[in-house]
Length: 169
Image 1 (cartoon, rainbow, N blue to C red):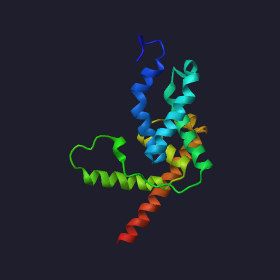
Image 2: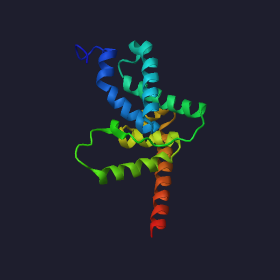
Image 3: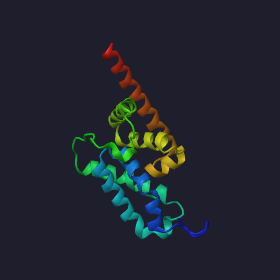
Image 4: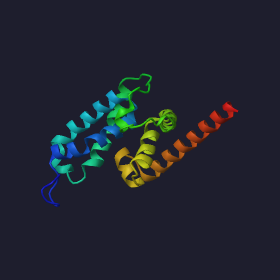
């Protein structure tokens, strides 16, 4: 991406290198391909004029922009969200992996029931593998709030799973 290890990466090169990853991240946050594309585009538009200041660590800035854009869109247009039929941006399926996709779909349907900040904290922790401090920076809260959001999200998911298992019996 950069000519030498000390200089910041070129914006276009960085977007070419990280664009698909940002789109997958946004899809996991928004659960909608079109909205994911919109929030990534909005985040990149916001990042471009600030590139000289954020080029040392643009991932954190752009992820925060994506999360904020999703929250703003949700506040602006209060509507019921639905899962999309095209999860192709999550990767190449190759041979039929119906069971793995059914399991993954079930997991994301459960995650879709979480409030936006809880869902974002869970995605940043378990999908992105970020520590509490980085998640807190992205979400604009303290590390203890991040731990609390994740704890509440996991408790909610456990309760939902327990209820589903009881219904199936």
